Length: 298
Image (cartoon, rainbow, N blue to C red):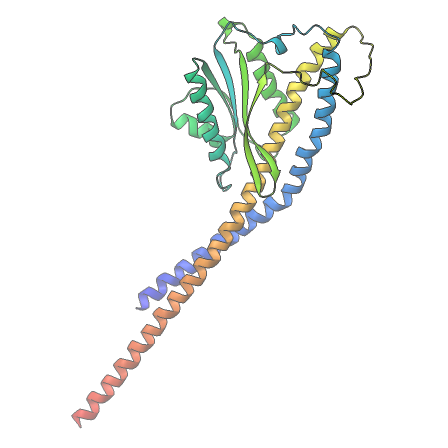
């Protein structure tokens, strides 16, 4: 039974070490989630202002812009999956990958040819293991995306959308990411980024009409500059939302792991105490039996 005590004590020490690691990761995620949440939610006012500017320009411009009208000369469709670089975040990446697989299957059933782009090591490893071709991937900084990374991804997707058919051009661009709702709720989202849909060009009833502007050099030229800027900003906002969701999911997962480690430590401690009591009982029994044997021999 002494061997059982040693085994349980080793398990207790190992679990205590894991508990410290889980607790440290929980505290790190908790310290970063506030900044990530503020960055994600703070991007919304700028994005809304940019949408309103695009709407104002589009109401005066020719809407034959390629980013709005789309194209019908190819069945290729770009799909960007936004996952994490590291694990220990519960089902965060698995949920995005499941939605991406569903979207890819849906596009294939519609007779389209999906082209896969991936952000994050978890997604890259998942699709490469399953033999799916990846047009391009980005790794590093999934929980703290910067504007340069967002611009690189957006420019790549814009280039694919505007490229000729013979150079691998695509007719649509979809993004699969996780929308941050609250600390306990992160929802996977599938958004079609291109071609764009201008939904605020018509003034709703009861609201003031859009103000009149004078565009220099002209509305079409201004729209040429605003639409790529709008796409880059949307991509950046989605990356920020995904980062906040990843940190929130990691904090929750590590909090649960810490609690589970505490439960294991209590269980192992109880089992170790039971083994110790059994050893003591066995030793007492042996002593009493020996004493009885000596008394009988006299």
